[in-house]
Image 1: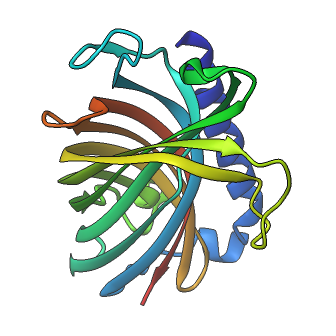
Image 2: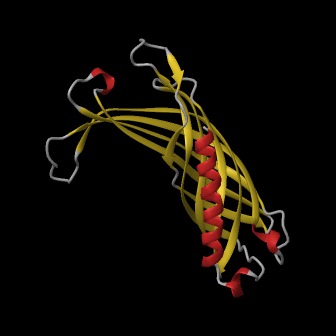
Length: 230
């Protein structure tokens, strides 16, 4: 976990430096102009852990995995109902981890990929606490809740590519649903009107009490964002 945190902190600092160079000085120092609507995307990495069924111990026996790295794509649609201060949004956040292991699930002499996709679709409230005319104008704080989904997929390596170019075929897939909670903080730069780029750090909790494969998931994400206010 400590190494994951160090990488997360390093990525955050590097992202801030990159965005600082991206932002045109003339625009970065201008007041933020968060108009009525927002469309945004994000992409990053971060550690995650899940409570997963122990396939070697029988039904209803679960264990907590170690923290593992994953990709964290996402998107959002928002409505700024208090200009430059408060926004409500509908958001998707994902954590995708994929591992390849010979002999996984007690299948001998085969290459198996195990893929976990823990994601949620949530409604969120964002607060912009800073002054739009100063350096604090890029700060935002966000929290939300919604519907959680955790998908577990087992893929088997093909001897050769199929007609669609796939090198693995799906052996098993299961979706578990539940409730998600998340919190996020970050900073965005105005790169040119009406676009802003930034970096955000979020914590996501997925509660999956009736899941067949998963019982819960916890993920951190550091992602670079691109938002269009219009």
